[in-house]
Length: 179
Length: 440
Image 1 (cartoon, chains in turn orange, cyan):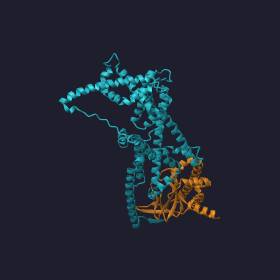
Image 2 (spheres, one colour):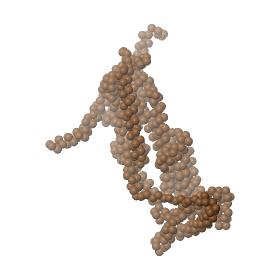
Image 3 (cartoon, helix red, strand yellow):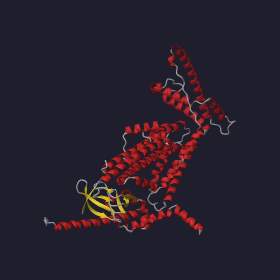
Image 4 (cartoon, chains in turn blue, brown):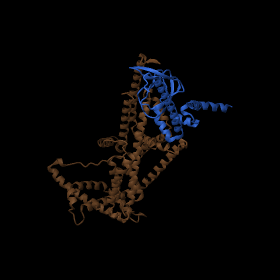
C-alpha cells in the first residue's frame, strides 16, 4: 500500500497526470466543434500539437479590420466582439461570439484582409490554427487536413447561402426594384 | 447594434507602461546576448553546425509515407543514417591522410614533380636552358614563386637522413621505391645548388651592403607551436554541443517554436507567425538547395576524377572537399581545382578508365573535369535546384566572404553567404509584413 502511495506522489510530482488531463480536456473541447467534425481522438490530439494557445485581456484585439488574415481563432472561454469601422476610432458591433465559436476561418484559405475586427469583451482564452500549419498537415496528415477543409467548405457554403438569401430578401423589399 | 468607443485613458497608460517594460527588457536582453556571444564565441560554430544540420534534415522527419512511424523512432533513424554517412566519409578521408613517413615521401614527390612540370612547361630542359617564349614572358614573375615553394618543400637534415634510412633494404621490409629515392636525390642536388647560389648572392650583397647599408633585410621565419593535444581536446569538448543540439532539435515537436511564439504580444501574434513561416520557407529552400547543389558538384567531380584515372578513395576525398568548398562563392571552385591539380602533380601510374585518355595529360583531364563540374553547376544544378531562392549582388557576396574570412577565418568564409541570406530574408520579410499589418 505504501509503495502505491509513494508511486502516486512520484507520479503527481512529475505532473504528467495534470498534463494528460489538460490534453484530454482540449481534445474533448475540440471534438464538439463543427469544424473538426469526424476527427478521431488521435487525430484531434495530433491537431492539438499545431494549435497555439492565446490569452486575451478585456478589450484586447485579436485582429484588426483590413489587416491580412493568417489564423483561425477558436474561443475556449470568454466572449469576443466582432466590430466593423464606422468612422474615426468608432466601431459598430455586429456580433458577440460566445465560447465554443470560431472566427477568422477565411484566413485558412488565403491572406485576404480581415472583413471585421475582433476584440475580447472579457478575459478570453483562445486556440489558434495558423494557415501554413494547416497546409503542412496536407503533406503530413492528409486525412486530418481533408476533413478540416471539407468542414470549412460546408461552413463557408452555408454562410454564402445565408448571405444570398439576405440579399434577395432585401432586394424584394426594396422600393426601387426594377424587375 | 451598439456603438463602441475605444482607446480609453487607462489603455493609453497601460500601453506606456508596456512600452517601458518591453524597452527595458530589450536593452537588458540585447546586452546579455552581446556579452554571451563574446564570452562563448568558441561555441558559436558548433552551435550553428548542430542547428544547421537539424534544420536541413528536418523535412526527412515529416517525409511522406513515414508519418505513421513514431517521431522518436524517425529521429533515431535520421540520426543513425547521418552518423553512418559521416563515418563512411571520415574513414575514406582518414585512409587518405598520410602518416609521418608518407608525408615525407609525398613532400619529395611533390617537389620533384612540381619542378619537372615547371621545367617542361617553360622549356627549361637540359639542352635548352634559355627557356621557351612562355618563360621569357613570365619567368621573372614565376621564378621567385618557384623558389619560395621549393624552399618550403626542402627537407631538413634529419628528414633527409630519415629518407636515406627508409630507402635502405636492410632497414625496411618495405623500403620506399627507388624512383622516389631518385626524386629525393634530384631535390637534394637542387637544394645544394640553391644554397650555393644563395651564398654567392649573399657575398655579393655584403660587398654591396658595405657601400649601401639600407639593402640589408633580416630573414624572417617564425613558427608558433602550441600544445596540439590540448587544442584538440578543447575543440572536441566544444564540438560535443553540435550532435546534442542536432538530436534535441530533431526530437522537438514544435514546442520550441510554440514557446517563442508564446512570448510574442497578442498584437504581433499573426504577424510573427507569418514572418516565421516565410523566413522558414525561404531559408529552408536556400540552405537545402545549397546543400543539394554542393553534394551534386562533389558527386560529379568524384565521378569525373575517377573516370580520368584518380583512384576511387582519392576521388571521393577531393569531391567531398570541393563540394564543401563550393559553398564559398568564387573561391570554392578554385579550391576544388587546386586539390585536383595537386593530386595530378604527385600521382604516378595513372590508368584512366576512359580508353581515349592519355595518362600523360592528367593535368589537362583534371582541368576539364573541374570545368565540366562547374559548367554543370552553373547551367543545371543552380537553376534547377536553387532557382532564384535568394539573389545577392556580387559585391555583397565578395565583400561578405572577404569580411567574414578576416573575422572568423575559413569557417567564416563557409558561413558568410548563408548568414547574409538569413539576415536578408529576416529583415526583408519582417519589414514587408510590418507594413502589411500597418504597424509601421
